[in-house]
Length: 248
Figure 1 (cartoon, rainbow, N blue to C red):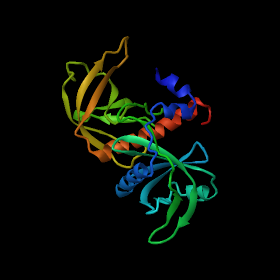
Figure 2: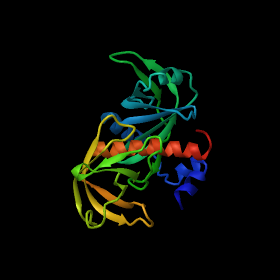
Figure 3: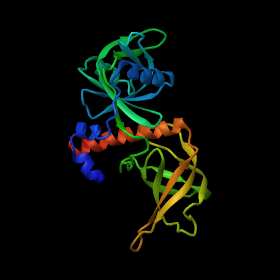
Figure 4: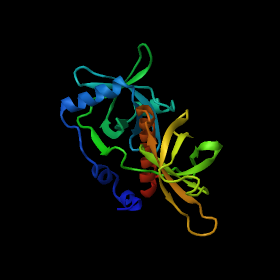
């Protein structure tokens, strides 16, 4: 099944293709305890609006009755969530994407402002680790910096690797060769990701002026960077779903 066919599906049907849900209180609690311990990043969707907001997990209630997240960014999301009927929370843990639906309870003022939301009754797994690639949007292209300050446009990216368009040939970038340091920056981040990578594929362009496409696999990338890529994939998936449904 191609990418276009997947995103023609109803959004919920698409998500359930990869379902391996957390349904018991013990499963849900263990998952949320871990993401709170790591201060995992969150993508919050309010009342199915196409716009999303960012936050961080902070705390889960001892009696499985609430979850605390940081205030939303951009800041106007904090006003919108107070008037909401439902909230969807997307996040990643160990490179696996999850989401749950919840409701706003109250704004919390203490050591610092935060948001209390209802403890979920079910957490849904969106996809298996590293199984899905997305292409950057035309409005927010991504370039990767290779050796000798060569910069190329990224074709697609997943937690496991990326591909890019290039005029370099197999002589210059042989399959099995290693880039000791590749650097790129995602539109959802305020810092660069730098990693070692091995060349896995090189597809020759057909026709005059058509570039080759090189696929690389990340090597020894830290979990923080993998989760940052997974967060980007979540955001792009939602953008693509909404575009296919004509809601953007």
